[in-house]
Length: 165
Image (cartoon, rainbow, N blue to C red; front, top):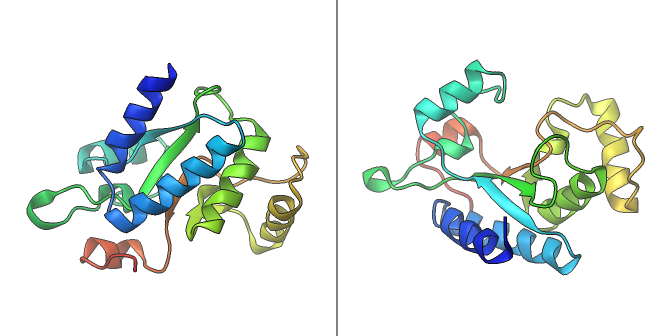
């Protein structure tokens, strides 16, 4: 994707997010861009039908998630995005990208999907890899490494109307 289209896509997708979450995601994007990375928001808000499809095809573990959150009148208020490396949009993202994305997400109060599904015994290794900028292929990565999401609330709370502060 050319640079203008990538930036336009990111701006549009940020409008699908709850404002406080959008600001944090925008900061993550800025941090990654400062390192020469070209992050692209692949998905922000998803319809329930799209979420069910993702669930049915094994791309999600939930039938309703932070991507599906809406506010008054059905306005999209996604609390998550899938943030791809636009230079490697298909297949497995480079390990360096995954680690740097996780670092930026954590720095801005977001939870990276690179921790999803990891037992506690492996989380410490990933945390240390993030801190040390260790891109070693032996470090275990969770099942959704390009996903970042709000913290401080559960999916059920978000569905019921709670939003991050």
